[in-house]
Image (cartoon, rainbow, N blue to C red; front, side, top):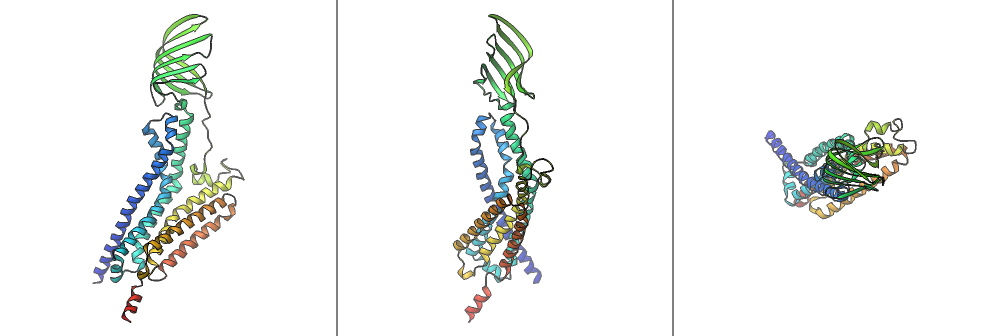
Length: 377
């Protein structure tokens, strides 16, 4: 009989886990899709101004996903746990589970285990994947604005690159142009018209050039016209190449780089606290998932069954999560100024998690035994 009871309990735990995981998959996918779509809408002008293909643009915005995941997953798990357990309350499932011997530790075990796994995954993102993708995103954006494709040579239009220089291309893709016409009147004494089948935009340290292939050139020099053909011709577009270097943000740097930011030349004495604050934020942020889930479980289990109100519990939990989130934002803003306060943030986080665990497991939440005693009396 004892083995059967344990087996039944394991089935119940698996049932709760499946409910949470399924809900987490649905809710996080929807929220992540909405957040990603909002980023796409925000960056649409970037797509148009930099003449990017839609596929390239989507690849670029997908680099924002790790940062969005670290924000969305803890919130999604918090919302799903509130929903799943409240649904079990309304369906009287928790009463049955308590009746067969499940206590609060057993009932909350699936949520706690899932939260621990999720927290480890968030640490992987914040400490490794997030900085890597942040650097790729900003590098991609920087190259799009400053590298060769940033000349804004649009297909099917006459593009005035600089004063006296106009270019028309029929097709443009990945810095490769085809069916090119160039009208160069920058020097009034030497006016050139160039036709070419193909061209490649290249750069040097000082300027940007267009290497043309298989074409012809007509030049007006001192009122005399000359014409010839070429297999390869380099045209100076008269555009000064921008610097290929850029300042790295704290979100792009690895953990080692943040610790030794001064030694590596990223920071000075005044800006160094900002770099350490980024590192501490990466170490603390995944713990939001544990804090949020404990708040949700307390809102579910700490209220007696006969007085439990889903709306009041949800409002309490949401208000608590918002308050803690604002508190952490304030603390990390303070860390950017006063670096010596960071031990207080870790101490506060440890005490908060410990207190929430104590509050959750202090006594049985469903209190069915007490209610039965009152009914029998």
